[in-house]
Image (tube, rainbow, N blue to C red):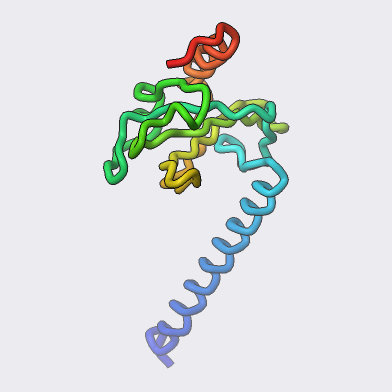
Length: 151
């Protein structure tokens, strides 16, 4: 028999294998997330939260607007705010959490872009990004928290 005779079974097997691998990766990510961890973007091992603190930033994006290339856009457009009561109606905000990998010791952040709707956070996207571009923003947020200056 010719190789092409088994082609549908081969394609089906490949699709099942890819779906199974994706499912395992997804389950691992959800398990780590439930334990306050995420996957390191550098070495793919577990990264733990550096602190329980979450940093809140305002985005210059309204309800239905989008932005391209989150890694470039977010560090240059986020504005630190001290609480969800400082989010104007219809504007989106981001929670930023700092993580550190136990294996490679590199830091990263998770950025959760959300819209506050009737007191509930409607999550638009979650990104895992390198920490370096966000360090100045986090320092600015910390200094605002210490001095009590609210934007």
